[in-house]
Amino acid sequence: MNIEHVALWTNDLERSKIFYETYFKGKAGEKYISKRESFESYFITFDSGSRLELMKMPGISDNRETKIVTGYVHIAFSVGSREKVDYLTTVMKQDGYMVVSDPRTTGDGYYESCVLDPDGNRVEITE
Image (cartoon, rainbow, N blue to C red; front, top):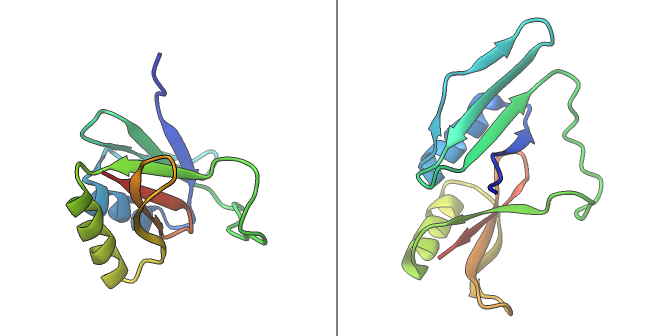
């Protein structure tokens, strides 16, 4: 059994699409627009075959009053090596994205960093 896809709400669909295409080599499918519900989405497909659905609809709040809430914590992308983790983290920091944690080896043995996407979702970059 496989997870088919994960979905994220966003208030700026194009900005989020560009983020995941640029930094994680995703390929966006055709934009879906439902006129009846004012709903729009893109499926972003990655080299591994995994997919991320980016969704937009009026009335979705981006207010996050606390840093830690129940629900999904992060999405992780494996980039293949420690050098690539270091490089991508540096590029994203230079491009103005918030780095939550610089590259390091975690207690459970992962070499990773953590950045925030344009909507403040945590994205881990692992080797």
